[in-house]
Length: 296
Image (cartoon, rainbow, N blue to C red; front, side, top):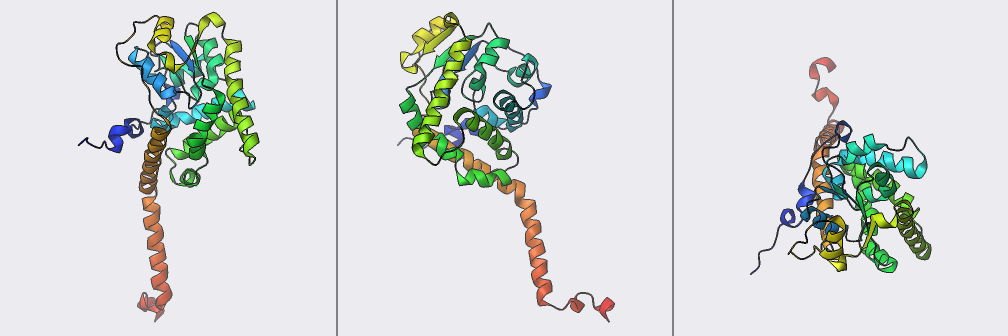
């Protein structure tokens, strides 16, 4: 009988926690590969592939869950680019935020491919795009459920370590790329697909054709390894994080948020219970019973 894996064994990325202030960091490895792979385009597979080829660490969204402090920098960068709030990032800030990585994929990083290409002109650009209709259906089954969850709205107030940092970044990211949430499902779909296509078009305008690779995961190692100038592995090309795996992973992530929220708020709950208990006792007994000397 096959052993059932624990949550930690299935999703080790959600059990990594650190508290690094990226503003105190600098570049320690060269940036070599920029992947414009929007959410639900095989970004986790691309991360695994690039790291297997020697381009690690590769930045992915789950790094934000591992080190929530850096979400504040991403929120600042998103506001500057999409909302004209604040100063746009220069190489200094990008080196602080991504200086430990040789590659990036997935949002929020892939929302800045033109900016990153400008400061890292020697990095190779890979475009991974799936059919819009298929992409949108995948987002409906995964990302949209997570971002609109009432649990996340509640955790924003309770989990000040992670959720209170991640949620504002996700809000700015999603509304900037895909517009505000719309009650009309037809307009909602139009907004998401338009934002999806616009993001790729922005990259194709900014990066010359000879400097980029249009790549589909189904092509396997061949085109990617040739473009990056590395030897092709003998192992199969990674395929990770389908819709059901994503949903299972998010359940683990949310469960860990609740556990953290319980630990963070336990002192306040104990204090509140103590106050409530004291109030109940005092309301049932005359105060002279507790202070007889003073009341006589």
